Amino acid sequence: MSEGGKPPGLMATPLTAQGNIQLENRIRDRITKGTYRKNAKLAITNRRNITKRLNILKNGYSKMKRKNTSDKIERLTRLLDEINTNAGPSVEQEEAPYVPFVEDEENSSLASPLMPANAKSKKNENDPQPRPNASMSDLEKTAFDIHCPGGVIDGCLFTKEKRQELYGKVAGGGGSKKPEDNQRQQIVLGTGRACNTTQTRINWRKNEMVENSQPMRKEDGFDYTENFDGKQLFSPYTVWINLKSVVGTGGSQTRTLRDECYPFVNAQLNYLLKTKRTDYFFANIFDGDEAAAKMKMFRYLLALPEFSSVKKYIYVGDLKGYFAWIKANVV
Image (cartoon, rainbow, N blue to C red; front, top):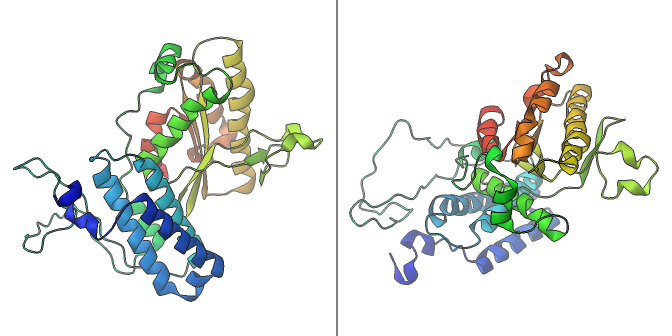
């Protein structure tokens, strides 16, 4: 360890809040000016720099228990996506090396993420090998390990008492967002990608997805579903996310599942049938003991013959199962 408790390798790649904000400002300025479309080399350099920082965060800072790790991962991942979008699909780069943190067996302290000059590398044929001129989509698929964070429990174990224990009073007001905020944070931690809020909805009558923050201002307002709570980019795929936490039995819980969640999933299935899109996935993450008890209703919907060709693009389940579904179907 160097002075201040930082691994030596981090000194060359600072991860301070100020440093990341300065990097973000520079990148956004370059995006605004269209610099990346004219200068592919600069786009490649910035991508590599951000990817290295993300690797350090994912593999080191989580073990070091630094604060705001998930926020940094989300910000840097968003920058990576924006560079990729604004640089254009023709720009390719050499994949940034993956540098995991390892435990030092002798003193149980964190070793440097960068191999010392006098260290001998041990090759493992099972380790992913960097490929020259890998495209950005290849990089996004191999740079991060998608896993279920340790603090995530089975959705059926999320009871009214458990929610009260974790979040206090959540019925109505700002407190009702606490379970959703936690779901979003765990999604970011487990995938290494941003899960940004959206105002995108499905018009179930026209089978169209549109940005509409205030559908009730027009006479066709009831033709729109609720908005998607988030979306994640796994280039070239997009996962649209619906988050819910439904605990305890009662009329309110039944209305949430029957009148909100069920029609929303049905609209997703019909949208896929009409558009025949294969780059969109929909994840309906329903935690809570009551949501688990009514999951058979959603299995019935997905098993209908008319949806046999598109049901593979839909996930309905708890947060814990989301990460395995992503690995099996998206990346």
